[in-house]
Length: 74
Image (tube, rainbow, N blue to C red; front, side, top):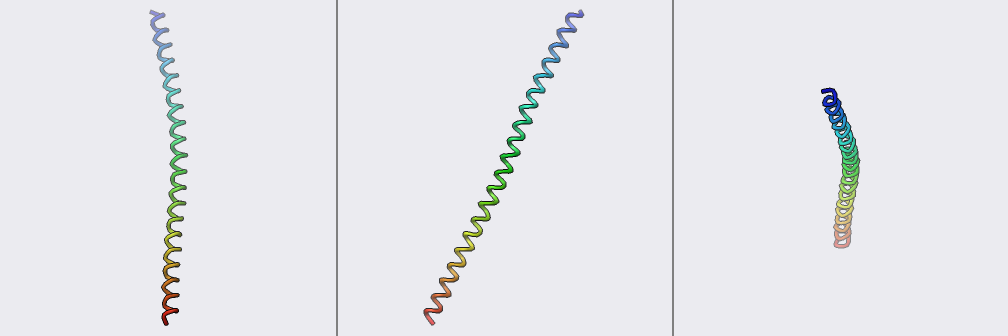
């Protein structure tokens, strides 16, 4: 009887330790995912800003070209 209780308790302790290890792995994966999402957010913001500036530069150049044509025409 006592041996059965000891074996059961040892098995339960083993399961708890394995669960703790799995939780540690899960926490590490969660941290990595958090870091990756932060980097993704930064990168997308940077790309969005660069695209916006590129579009504005194109608009300015087109506007300047139209003004130059108007000046040359008049």
